[in-house]
Amino acid sequence: MPCNHQHVHVPAGHGRTFEVRAGQYLKVVDSNGQQAADFVAMQVDDLQRYLSPAHTRRRLGSLFFQVGDCLYSNADEPLLQVIADTVGVHDANVPACDSSRFSVDFGVDGHRNCLDNMHEGLAAYGVLDINVPEPFNLFQNGPVTADGRMQVTDPTSQAGDHVVFKVLKDLVCAVSSCPQDIIPGNGLQVTPIDILVSDEPPVAA
Ligand SMILES: [Zn+2]
Image (tube, rainbow, N blue to C red):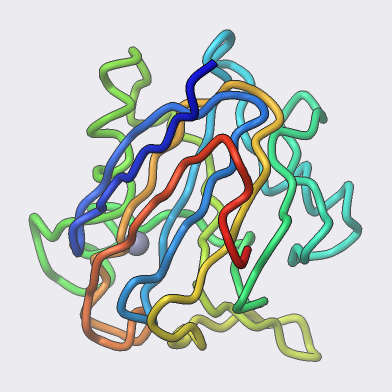
């Protein structure tokens, strides 16, 4: 089989959808730094099975993941394994921002948002917006305080920081460069995300 490489550029504040195959490597790069990337994945052969932060939290016994951990589906099967992570700070606890987050919470109608960004490409697979799975929010900084309260603040990631996953099942993935520019979350400056898919582990992963 010929070596296959794919580069998906996610423009600032937009989303992209793409497929990966079992055995490949998926590298998500915060190209400019301090940019959250909402990420969902659904099985190509059965869209009812998708990456589930809730099942992953139960499996890991943790609100956060680290290198070596697998991320699990709603059918409790591993879909991805984390093989490299130059940041170590991500969020698996809050939903994607959506139109009501901006219109109700901030009084801004028609603001770009992660749910629409991810649904845009998934709609071609017949996925309804209400069925876009809960995301893993890569690079998002959502610390939990000692008394159990949740915060969202700016990412600690710097330009070029990345996460690499080994792909364990054929997946359709959607990534959103979070358009949140009203409160901290992306350094108040929305920037692109780059995706690299390869048959071999990325160099210096
Ligand atoms: Zn967002």
